[in-house]
Image 1 (cartoon, rainbow, N blue to C red):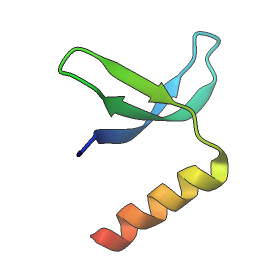
Image 2: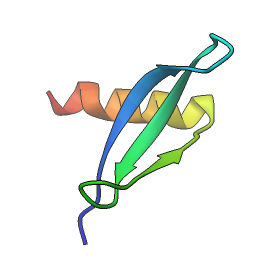
Image 3: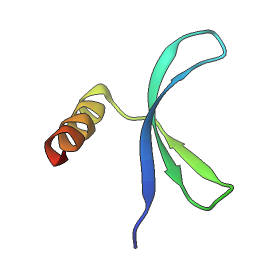
Image 4: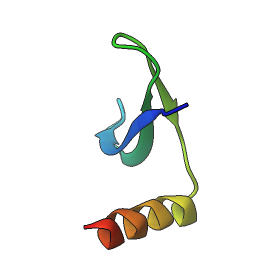
Length: 51
């Protein structure tokens, strides 16, 4: 099974910035996954090394 997701920086209703993993379940449905800072950094490193 392959699941597509993107790491996005968003702004909350209160104006705070946050990073979230957005997983596309279907064309119209997405799941937001809130990660710890260390998990976010690992994903950024993986993407940087794959270029």
